[in-house]
Length: 293
Ligand SMILES: NC(=O)c1ccc[n+]([C@@H]2O[C@H](COP(=O)([O-])OP(=O)(O)OC[C@H]3O[C@@H](n4cnc5c(N)ncnc54)[C@H](OP(=O)(O)O)[C@@H]3O)[C@@H](O)[C@H]2O)c1
Image 1: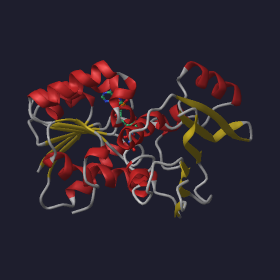
Image 2: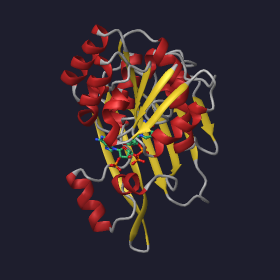
Image 3: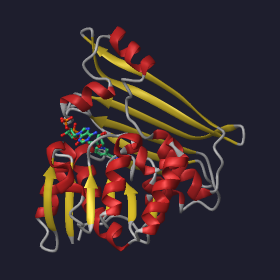
């Protein structure tokens, strides 16, 4: 498989390094902005786009890769379920992918596994659709400076509040995408998603945050997702999934899934499933699990 990687930041570089360890993969890149054309138009079997979180920002890159005949795998959180963000754009790119016989997939550790694919797998042991609660406590210390600032670390409490209000501070991106992806797979209709974010402050500066999103279905909380991020590598991390079925199901992963290495692995392990998938814009719910090979 020939893979071209656009985005020479942390994720693109880590995926390239992992894939280079595999004999069956030829890796081109990671390429930065200056080499956009080379990254996207080579006709590689899979183009990995690891640049931003936002669908609108990568739409042109996806179009270019699709029309060059490449399958697309992207880290952009909004791409995990693009219909949540912009159904018109998602529909347009889905159609374009089908016309060119290629696949588009948004994946990573989260979205892509922790708040969605893994939740669906665990829910498979439940006889009926049941309320879900998912928690992640994540060590953020391995993220680069740009990502940390954007998610909310390193601000005064006032700047944090202002950034949340104007949308420049986001916390973890991808809750609604994961929730809609899971809901679509289980046939649940989400009525609304309630959201809150609170900073963790030490010595007058934000060192993390807690986000809580609650998807309401049938007039009641159905899917609660909590993301607690901190920058102290000594603090314990964990992942937990609770399905309020009969009997209830509790999965606990300790230490928690590693944000950087886990994402790079899911992405590297997704290359084969994207290359083999049917045409169109798919989600991780449409595909077999990503496994190392
Ligand atoms: N789904 C998941 O689980 C998952 C996992 C990992 C990452 N992500 C997301 O994927 C994105 C990349 O992550 P990262 O950790 O690699 O971030 P990063 O270390 O900040 O790297 C991003 C790279 O992309 C470049 N870039 C940013 N915007 C661009 C654009 N519009 N066009 C072309 N290049 C652009 C940046 O270049 P400049 O420095 O020139 O801006 C930088 O080299 C982030 O938005 C992150 O949130 C998601």
